[in-house]
Amino acid sequence: MIETLLTYDTELFLYLNNLGTEKWDGFWLIVTEKWSSIPVYAVLLYLVYRHYGLKGTLVILVSVALMITATDQLANLFKYGIQRPRPCRVEALQDQMRFVAEGCGRFGYFSAHAASSMAAAVFLGLALRKHYKYLPFILIFWAVIVAYSRIYLGVHYPLDIISGFIAGGLLGWGFYRLQVWGQKKFNG
Image 1 (spheres, rainbow, N blue to C red):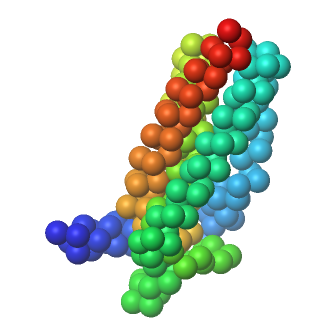
Image 2 (image 1 turned 180 degrees about the horizontal axis):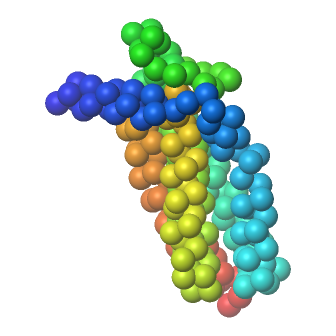
C-alpha cells in the first residue's frame, strides 16, 4: 500500500516538475526564497498593527515566532526521523526530472516551506478575517504558490507538500487559538 502511494507520488512529482521551462526558472527561484516573502509579511504586519494596536501586535508577533519555530522543528523531526530522500537525491530520477534549485538537502519529508507558509496563512488569515473577508483565501493561494515552487525546483514530492500543509494548517490553527487566549489574558 505505501509502495503504491510512493509510486503515485513520484509519478505526480515527475509530471508537475516537468511542466517547468527555463523561461520560468528564475521566477520560481525567487518565489522559493524565504526573503522574497518579506513584502507580504510587511503588509500583514501593518494590517495586524492597524487592527490590534501595539500590545496586540506584540502578542501576535510572539505567537508567530513560536509557531514558525515549532513548524520548522517539527519538519526537521520528521525529515530526520523518516529519512525519505528528496527527489534530487534519487539517482533513478536524475534523467527524468528538472533540477533547478541551487542546492539539495538530504531528506524532504515533510516540506518546511509548505508547513511554514500554510501555518502563517492560516494563523494570519484567521487573525484578520473579520476585517478582510478574502484575505484567508489570498494567503492560502500564496502558500500554495510557495509550496509548488519546491516541486518545480525538484526538491520535494507532492506528498511532502501535502503533509507540510496539514502540519502547518494544524499548527497555524492551534497557535491562533493560543493567541486568542493570550490576547484575553493580556488585555484582561
